[in-house]
Amino acid sequence: MIEGGQKYARLAARVLLEQPWESPPADVRRDEVVAAMALAIAAKARRRRIVTVSVATLAAAASVLVVLRLAGGTGLPGGTPGAGSALVVQHTTGTGNQLVRAGSTQPLQDLGMLAVGDGVRSGEDGSAVLGFGNGTRITLSSSAHLHVDDLGSTRRFSLFGGHLQAHVAKLGQGERFVVSTPDSEVEVRGTVFTVAVESPPAWCRDLTSGSIVRVSEGAVWVRSGDKQVVLQPGEIWATPCPDPQVMHNAENVERSSPPSSPVSSVRAGRRKAFTPRALGVAVPVLGQNPSPVAPAPAHADTQTSPVSVSRLAEQNDLFSAAMAAERQGQHDLALRKLDELIAHYPSGPLNESARVERQRILAAQGLR
Amino acid sequence: MTENVLKLRLVKSGKSQGSSPELLDDARLVAAVRSGNSAMAGPFYDRTRPIVARTVHRLLGASDSDFDDLVQVASIELLHSLDRFRGECSLDTWTSTIAANVVYKHIRRRGLERTIFAPELAADDVPQTAHQRPVLRGMVERVMQHLGQMVYERAWTFLLHDVHGYSLDEVANITGATVAAAQSRLVRGRHELHERIASDPDLAGGLDVLEDQS
Image (cartoon, rainbow over all chains, first blue to last red; front, side, top):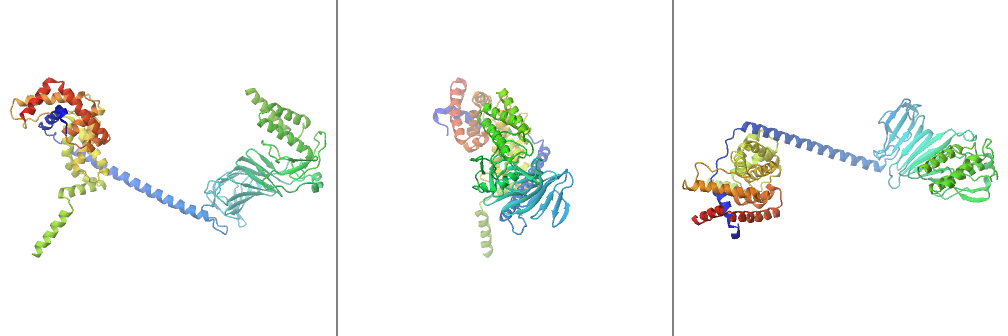
């Protein structure tokens, strides 16, 4: 109802309302409009069918995923992995990739399932990527030999040769991911790391093969013998090179250490905590011994082979001190340590790395 | 007697559903179109076309060159809107609202370069005397001029509600506004139109005479 104060609006509406109207124009386009409407009805029905099918497909896929997830969580016993813990050959490259199963060898097929007891050998020019449903991936480089030990709550593998890179997705409670090598065991949780089993360096005559662990992300526990170290991102651990001189003094050492603490060593009459191989850079395999070592000579040597462990430890300390100083922003101190290492051990195994780091620091200083 | 009782029961049962044959037909027609039966395009068009045409014709104005196009657009839009039709109003009301919305958007898009509302008097259905016909035509045109100078949304809200009888809910749907906004626009539109006509002595005098005669 229009208020009295708006009289003219009411009268205007009345004028417009009471006016006679012409009839709408005749329908001259009926067939055209009806055809368009028929097309619109059909298109709408088609869209509805597509949406229905899509929703049904998504629902079915979601149901399958839920079932697979539930089945995978149970971890079927007897070496038969559930769907969630199934290890699949995601893809292979090159030639010569083989699956060793029940004593027989067969070509490694893409999308093939691996079970406990299976072995995978990558060819000389081959590689393979193995994957779990939760996103964990294992990349085998050429000439690698991996054995699947367990696919239950603990996923355990043995690397007998070659090189692998593992990208481990976050594991659930009680789940473990372990890679064993002939001389060590690597356990990770939510980590990117590499493990390699390689020939030892020439100066390490008593070692037939050695393991190298490099950590890209997260943290890794490396156990070797009765020792355990924790590697942080960027750190490297390598199999120690046994030395007869060291073994001779084995009774003088402390054999055990807390599970998560760095390995301890007694050297030159003083106790010092260190992290074997945890140098923060990719270095050659060193003869760092996880066992305590004999006292080092007080003087620098000329690096006649083989290098004694005590002198290697000094080199390690110098290099570690340089890297620690660099990380703390003490560039001059880092350079002095590196120069000392380069001057005192011109043919030492860390000499080349020290020169590289020295150049890197100098270049960075130039930029600064 | 038994036959009469049986007939009464049948009639009573039909009335209890509260649906006239026309409504039942509309419901079936809408259901058929919704189900994707393209053969229902013709019957649906024949059923709704008069409402669409009348709405477009009145809101767009007579002899507008866009009339046929807008009728087609409104008919297609009616199909797309059927999923929202819940039967809470008649199919005629729904159709009229959808058609009005199409016209509203169309006129707004083309920028008001033409009159928003230009009705023409019918040749046959005229006021009582030949003298009154040009007078009424003149008043309608003057009112249209004032409406054309008003804020677009206010003028349309006034026309849709006070002239064409759409409810505030329907006006809100047509103009894409909230009911509160439609209510506000209506009040302001009435006030603005009143002020404009009050300041137009010729039109105000003509409307006063018209009111006195009634």
